[in-house]
Length: 300
Image 1 (cartoon, rainbow, N blue to C red):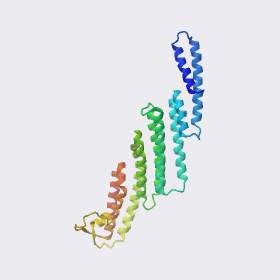
Image 2: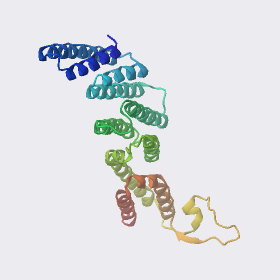
Image 3: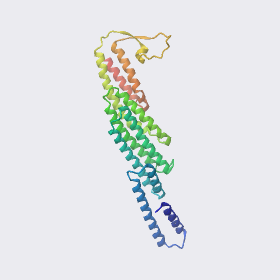
Image 4: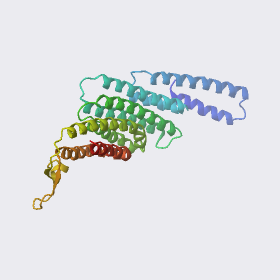
């Protein structure tokens, strides 16, 4: 039974309610018949929407029908369930793929998850418009899917924590995630605060692991130092020889031991790696980590 026919019968029922000639028994009978037809239509459309092979366009068509029949809650749940399952399957497929390097994998992960969230939110807007009484359900769903992404992200960064350059790779992965998360702002969905809150503890843990590793490195090159002072160019130490100073200006020099020079160069590289973490309000843990490295150096 087409929905348009049901809507015509529903309009006819409303006219009958205004007609004093219609008895209460007739109205009750007509209402019961309409209710049964409505339930059958919703059930049929729900089965279509839950078909694992349904495409997004066909899903949207089924959900529009359910909304026309008045079951907005059902349509919302079906929409969010559809994209949740697609996200779960997509993440599993990415995790099983052997064709991605570490950096490419997390980029694809962020791109896929936030693209799916974007599509789900876009489908929601098509159904209900920019404002909807169901908006809180959408926001809750986007937060839950963001937590799923963070869990996969955490698994990834822990897998590279012992690899050379692991901290910089993890920070780069975070930047990819933030850039794709920003796409949702076009739909007035501000997911960055949610992503910050859930991903920060994992990045703090990665930072802590690497600070402990850096402490050992500092201890090693300090222990082997001859403690002979050398004259080093300050820009060369701070910028790895890539100074932008005026060539006509006399360079500054300082006296350092070999381990002192290595320590300053090492710190400069670390600061460059962790600078993007300030975007997720990790200034405190970064400062604590740097102070710990200074402490280790001063007591070596």
